Length: 240
Image (cartoon, rainbow, N blue to C red; front, side, top):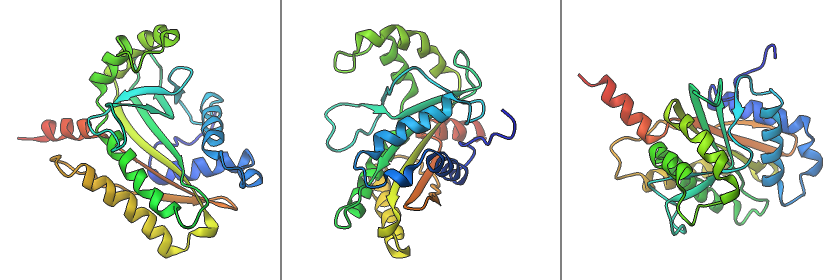
């Protein structure tokens, strides 16, 4: 498809692309619905499979499990389910994969800024995503991850995890009516402060750029970066 933007080129590209897709699909006409997280998951998935994300392809037919070294504080195990996972330019030996967490942080002025701290927990889990342990789980899932109807899919796709550079991403819906400059800064501060606290024992910390774009009723916040294991690989490669 000509002139298709790579949405995962940068945080700003991702925010703008997501906003355009959601506006085209009518997000502002359903802005009072309290289950928009599921709605915009489906619409971004549809945009990917319809070729509106360039060479990116959806990996599988559902949300996928991944292994994290830092599960969220309320999690009992080291496995989480990712909202979207894509690969390019093919699913057999991809050059890149991106693992995308989606969140609608709510419409309540008393809670939505507090909910931003949860974004930091999710980001810490994504940042410490472990591709090798994720691949092993797709080949031989532990009982609490097992979905026997999906085991053939996981086995078929698992080898792809070995090949690419990995990216992690978050895309967040926030109500414009609650976001003046000070509140936006507070959301981002809660998000990144919680993230940094969760990963403070690690040797590396990424530079996180949160970008934004707008629809009539929503701010779309987005970030994209490399996971911790990839930063470590880069450090080892560049070391004397």
